Image (cartoon, rainbow, N blue to C red; front, side, top):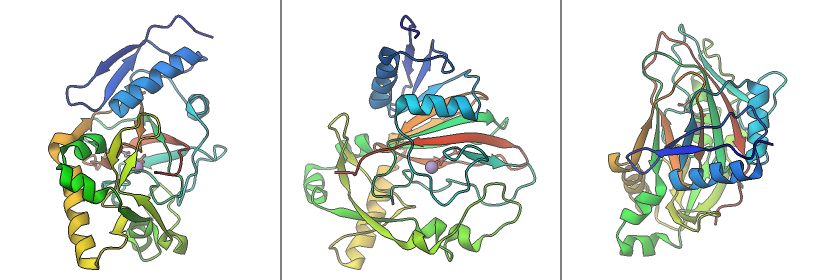
Length: 286
Ligand code: OGA
Ligand code: MN
C-alpha cells in the first residue's frame, strides 16, 4: 500500500471539475487515497487524472477500488472485459456521435450508476471535448417557489429516444459505426425518479433530469409536462453551470452521475478517438 502519496487537487475556475495529480492509478491505492479521491469527486463533480498509463485491466482494477461495477446497457462490451466499453470512432466514420445529447448515464435504470470512469486512450488533436452541467448549482439557482413546486415531482426516464428500435440509433444503423449498439424494445420501459434528488453522499439537493432520458413528469398534463421539462432542461444546462472538459491522451476522468449531466461535443470528424469506459454502481435515487 502506498500510504504516503500526496495528492494535489486543483479545482477548475468554474465550480465543476478538478485535476488530481501526485498519484499513479496503477498502484494499489490506500484507503486514505481512495477517500481523498472520493472527497474531491464529491466537491468537484468531475475529477481528472492526467498522465495515467492504464489499459482495460488496470481500468477495471481502479474502478473496483471506487465501488462495484454498474450495469452496462444496449452496447456490446470489449472482448474479455464485460464491464468495459470501448468508445471507438475511426477517421472514416460518419455516424452520429455517441453521447451527443445532454444526459446522466443510464438514468433510466432503477439504480443508475454513481460514477462513470472514462479513460482517454487515443485523443484527437482537435474536438472531442465533453461538457458537464452542474445539477447542484442549477438547483440552487432556481427560485425557492420553483424548488418547492418541484420537490414532490417525479421524472419519467426511459432509454427509448436513443435505444428503441425506432429510436435515434435504432433507425440510424450506420454500418461504419465501430461502437456496437443493440437497439431493443426493452428501451421503452420507464422508470420514475425524483426531479429533485438528494445526493446520497453529500446530502445536497440536485436538479436531476435530462433531454435524452427524461420524457415526462408524472401527474402533470402533457402540455404542462412538455413545457416544464423543456424549461428545466434548458435551465439546467445554461452556460453558467457548464464546465468544458478537454481531454489528453492517458487522462482518466471520473464524473458523478448523481450531480452532473454531460454531452459529447464531437467536432473531430476525420480523426480517431478511442476511450475505455466503466461505471460504478449507484443507489435508487431519492
Ligand atoms: C459516456 C459519454 C462522452 C464522451 O461515456 O457516457 O457520454 O465525450 N461520453 O465520450
Ligand atoms: Mn454518457
